[in-house]
Length: 571
Image (tube, rainbow, N blue to C red; front, side, top):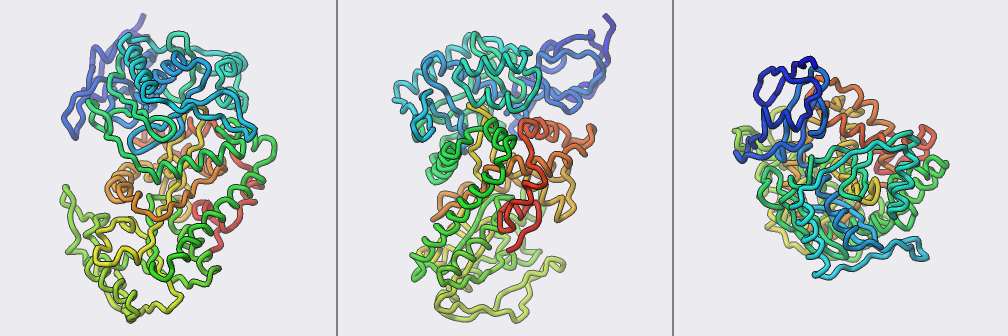
């Protein structure tokens, strides 16, 4: 057989290899491990990018390619590890609970929240949770360790969609079977581990022996599956029991079950059957009730709390949340006034710098905290203050004669990334502040054991909005996203439990909506772009979702939070 010439990005050299060599063999010859640039830790290769497309190590090289071997230090390496670990968990759960079904529900800061459920629905159409004992959780962990120690091989088999659907109905995984049916494909890739079958929407590691680092900890009604920290393959992410966040996700998951939309398969069915507008109306009504509920809670504390702080990660819909909340407060007789926190930046030359010596505008101390606290206390005391204006072009604070005074029914609304950080208002009586956390916390899943990332949901939102409003290309959005997420992890997520109320801006119809706008944008990204790998991943994910039609999109009300991203907002 003739040789094939490939370029290995890891060593920067061209190599001639036997045509048909698989990546696992090739990694052993060229690059069995990679080094994390941040920690210096050597991590084993678990997947590869072939011409910027993620491939499992069983992939056979049949023609010239550019190949980069990746480990857990790469985002796609982490996803590959976690997918594979989920299959091990599924295998263990079937061994121990053959008459029940594992559901991998949603992401937590420390891992994935999972439940074991009964297979018979209640009258309300809900699958009851099997409440695990500590002993049962320990048995799941022990069984997973046995499967990993056996170093079992993951096999991928092509099956007809009809065969796959029948297989998963017999396995008591109707969400997976419904998803397969809704896509209308002729063939489907099914993975096998021992005698168990499952589907995963991305490659797996070659065998279970790669997955030595994990843990399982009891959490709420189920447990948290933990995997290695980002960049630290040797230990799991520390457990954080963020009860408010978990309760918000649980509420959304429960509401999805009540509406009968337990996964993307049933969501696709609703759209295919022409019931999308009905679903849109129900989802928007739920949002309106949530706005009203938070406004009621603010009203109950109106005699004391005069300042409303709103924070949330990128593309969580903070702007729309602020406006809709203000309207609901007006309904109750309160008069909201707004302070722009960006006007409290220190002068440019006084801005802190990061580890690279560049201005860190996301630092809490990029704001003049003394001035902010003084003016807030003055406003609470009934005084009139002259508000600052930050001239971003000059990098200087200015005073232009704009004054503010809080009358009896006035409340102050402030939105910013540090709004939940108590250090920002450390000189203000905490009882005077009502804090709201807004985020798009979807717990909708593709099927029983493939959850949807809330980060991906927000990335799609931002991509659509920034391209429409700011002229930012989808490639630029993808390349900036890691930096955005790093800032959120530092400045927002650690403080979300400080909120007095949480608003979940996720809407059950938004992925079919975002697909309509995001898919054409992603297809513009060239194969040579460093953003191409992520674009391919997102396109593959969107390929499992049926898009809304223009007529259905037109039915989304102008007050919807999604109008902040797709346009047509009237607030």
